[in-house]
Image (cartoon, rainbow, N blue to C red):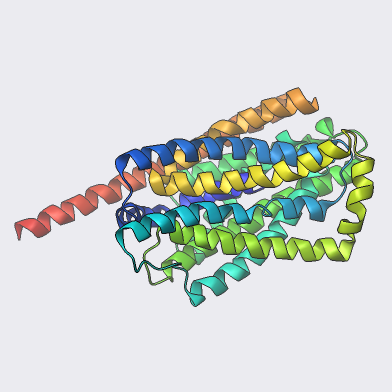
Length: 371
């Protein structure tokens, strides 16, 4: 799920683009270091966006049945975020011996706790849905998150609809309807029609919930009363990841997942060793996605992150057909085209808006200098 989640976060963080440039200055990144980080983050985003959903589906494909476990793994790699945070602190200390250890405030921390718990619920909805539908179908359904994000952003942060965003919402909605009307054609083996549609609507529910969460994250940025830097966003992601994992861990305890893991591993279709390997790499790849998305947003632009994620939707589709032998129907092909069209429309609209804001800012600066 997270593989699409942060795509919308990318689109909602345009208000933070000016903070990103100040962030790089504050943290004194050299041009060489910045280029290196861009390459690394693009690579992490690409493999995380592709590998996370595929490994999640691989778990269910060969005998995994614990939805709470799978949802927990989506954010269980949160300690990996300590690595870039430590590196960031090291570079700050090189130029300022009194550099702050962290930037997150109690106000932002509390907001991130609530957002983290909602993210945990969203992870569960996504994992439960993916247990009953193909990963190719899931990827297309999750792309509708853009429509929900646009709707809730309009309500929560008063983000206006544009012709581009309206076009994107319409295209993504039509794509989801096409999949729903012809869903019985791509049911996985041993999945009833009822379970398939339950997975279908739970995945849509996951897209809707995170479409609500992301404008709330933007609202947190707006109410933060401090500069939104790369380091602060990583700290926020760490807190949200931790409490999302706590939420899912409680679900695992109630559901008895910890006791069931050894038994499930012994009966896993690929063997016990590969069972644990799938679990470990699933959590790592999801966290790769988070780190890559945050890095691309603050080192380059939100648009690049959105483009990378959109480009890899067809890659997930192809891998689903190759590795899981999923049926790629004509309806799914039409939905894919509509999804990519909608994402392209929205991304272009965001690009136009960013260029207009930049032109207005430059005109204002020139006017101020002439006075």
